[in-house]
Image (cartoon, rainbow, N blue to C red; front, top):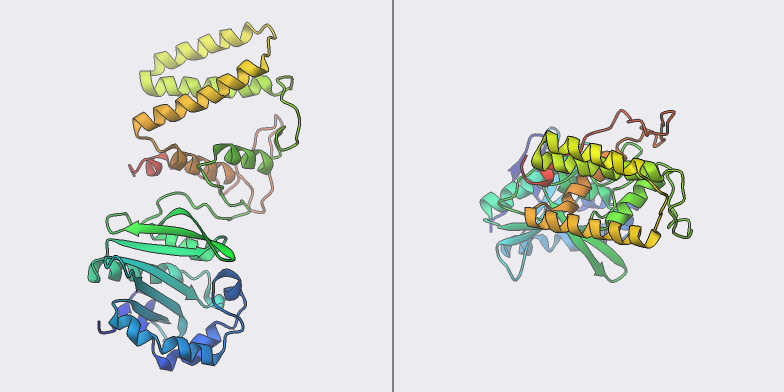
Length: 340
């Protein structure tokens, strides 16, 4: 395949050549690349020359290897590759970096977008894959903005890597909420571990957690009635969503009467069994309904963590309710269901 340029609004992807050795070397003098990728440090001119000598054969074998340059003044901004899968000719992997002093300008996001256009429209790819060291949020943000989905963690010698992919038929917009640290909020944990999500919420907002504190199970605590009221509210909301307003009102009235009939039983074994069964049957209903609860929980968790103030602090009302910070957003449940 003959090398070719790809033009974007702010950048141009230009086939790399031996003439780029000095620019490549200069861009990789920051040790941050060694910490977040497999690029060695210090990175020398001879390393760049040796690496760039392999570029022509990449193009000959159906891959692409570009310098990312400014569309305005031609500055070297980084590098992006489309690496053809040796076993499946319609699959590619995208790999990229942007100079550290150019981070935060949307360069990687635009470069990935142009590479995907090329992969799907020119190369006929059905899927493009992505991988990065676990914790490389900059790489993930560019992929996330372009519609990639994280698909797991690969164990490799000496490190672990996030892996993900996007299909030619997938939307080129975020498939879920941003799950990395931002505006004082921590990263969102794996939504396939719902207890860990709730523990993160409790830790973030300074709420009790007897498991974290290695305390014995008990139902003798001040917030018990508040906890039951939350379950009542969500059950009433579910019945209302299924059967209508009158059904919701009946449930609210009945559960209120049940609470008022409290005789202080507090059976911890039966309570644990009931809570576990609730989780089980809720997931069962979600499966039969085609609702991916992991994706729904990811949206809810991201929304919950967005209540933090910009500096990461928590503001509470007098009754202890968490006040919403200026960066709060509601969960995008329609996106989780693929119905945006």
